[in-house]
Image 1 (tube, one colour):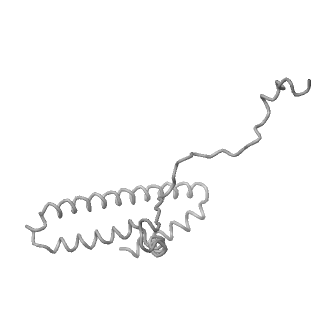
Image 2: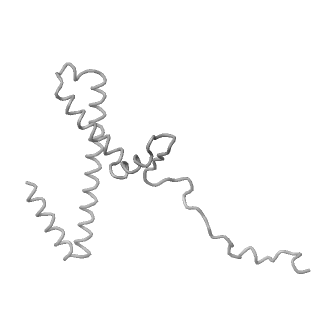
Length: 137
């Protein structure tokens, strides 16, 4: 008879497999697949992107192009393509400024926490920041 009826306490038994994916299908950070299918030199491109991200590369190109456009006569700057580029450049710079402001807000909050929890460390960090700000003037 043994084994013919399930044990009613098996309902409470721990599972035998503890492997469970956390957030399946989610990607954290940026993922760029560089393969032989989309690059003639994937190893080289991977090294370049590791050193200088696509965003950094595009940002530098955009900054240089903005300077070149600014040197054009005003009537040429108003061309649709240049006007659209200028709008895109402004929007990206606004996003960067907003991100910098959020970052500084986090730093201010961290400093407040440090002041409350570790006053000596706060004084050291605050003195360093004061010196940096003084030199920046």
